[in-house]
Length: 431
Ligand SMILES: *Cc1c(COP(=O)(O)O)cnc(C)c1O
Image (tube, rainbow, N blue to C red; front, side, top):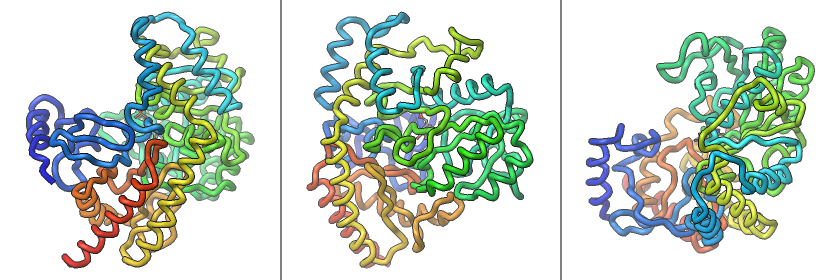
């Protein structure tokens, strides 16, 4: 597959943009070759700058649950755009999207729209701190919450210590407000609550971590967090930026019977335009300005085009759409699982609703990030390249999940599994 134009564009982009990209993982650092430049994208398929077509399982990293350029989404945006692109004043589109979000997340009395998932989580943390008058937050190793300073913290050594910054530029004083626990470990959570419970403003978790593999949590673990938060007056924040709207019940919040205090949303909620949101019960959300003292604002918050794209996306997400996604997911499992078992590579399929991940170990899929073998990327880089050559695009990192959309059809899944089978066979011959 010729990718000369993409490579030339990447060389040019690298003169102007840091590493040629505006978000690091797009740079293909952990897989082979240069990033692929997109020229056009329709439904499940991307056309690159060299006119190759690729079945896309990245789907802009999650927002496009109906695929690229869905006519209803385009139509909603176009119609809205003719009446202006931004007002900096209230408009009916905000009410429409808020109503839909509340119908899907009934724990929300009030919603605040922002422009990214990062902003949603960051603001939810500030609100939790403002409501409780406490500074410390508990997060989990292996969860990603965007590039929020206080959450770009990894576990340090030893049990229940404050963490270490996962990037330079994060003040030690900020890191000192973050405690890091292991996922799937009630004892560690108890230990932390015993030590810091009275200082904890919030426990923040991806209830189904999907940015560092797909680390499906036990419901009992999430219930345990709820219980400890209640006992200590800490708020439980679910970061559903990636999982929100992907489950027929809405998010994990409805899927497992655990109700958080605040939920952060992003990705699907904007249907491919920049939207994030957070919401919860009135007694918490009313602490936010203009009703309360906790300040948070945004020039483009509630942007009319973004609200329109979000409304169109959620309107399309009916029972039939979820049934289609579930059918695709089941087909993927039915075809890929026996095929992967036959090859015997350390590669297992984990699938939840329209999210999937190839777990790079021989054992049962992990619930904690430290159980993902550190060699995960080696086989994946070859698989990723082999799939690109056969017309299938997975995320350029072994730790990222794949996304199914309603634009995918059975033949995309069948072709994908056949291509993966072929790639693995080729890799065996080469060994
Ligand atoms: C993507 C993601 C974020 C960050 O959202 P951005 O829109 O990229 O800022 C935060 N949390 C989770 C769980 C995510 O998947």
